[in-house]
Length: 174
Length: 177
Image 1: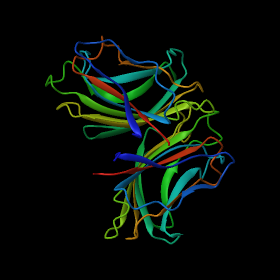
Image 2: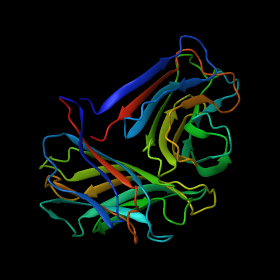
Image 3: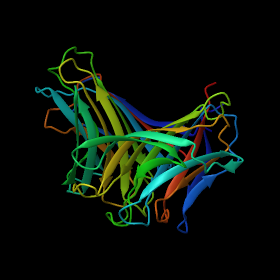
Image 4: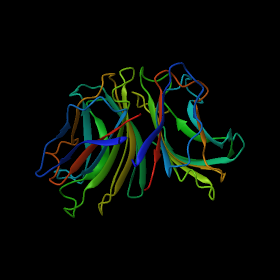
């Protein structure tokens, strides 16, 4: 029996405001989310937001270390209404149209109700003007088992560009 | 044959100074470890440390590491040579938000290769609901065990405290064919 199983894949045949994975089985130890993302924003870059179990309250924190072109940066945000699932991703004004950023998120012990949910993520994209890579972690201050994951462009754009793809995996521990 | 196999999964019941797995078979190509951990210490010294062995644990000064780290808005880089362990750096501790655990993702490629030293790559975080400097941490680490022995034993020590209850360690073996 496979240790890593695909729970669901969403390939956008058309632009979409959000992507949701719901009814996530509680039968795994960890989850992993892999994605290629491009958003409809009309400015240069946009992050990907993530909310768990429909919680829109200020129960999230994210910390990041990132590099843009030749500059390094780092920092944290707390009491926010979403996690970051990726750092900056390419947008509709960043050519070529075939360019999508890559992101990978591990969601650890997502059904363990003795602990808040913690994620670690890495992402990158190499637009000619604004290449950007990020490593980060996030916290949802809630001990509930995660059953729903909502992804959306976090800087207010209308959504993800057609061709963006999101795959959720489950990792077993036995 | 499945590409990923679970070699060990441990959830800490009673606080423990370390997690250790012995008898790791040489039949895989690579190892990956996912840790969701919380250290009972508070503040200085709250970072995990990794050691290897083939049979007995190597506690000699045969380890080194280089890191890129952030604990404030300024990133830093440093190295650690001639050490008795690979530092995995900071993990959430008992000063941090309640019920909050940090994360380690550790890759050990070609762990059974007896011709080469063993290289480790790790991504680690001490997550906390705070943006104040030094209350959180992120690190990318390249670590080296200067031994051509295959890795039969892995130990991940807590900081100056213990791994707290509900900390989990999952060791995967990965095959290439």
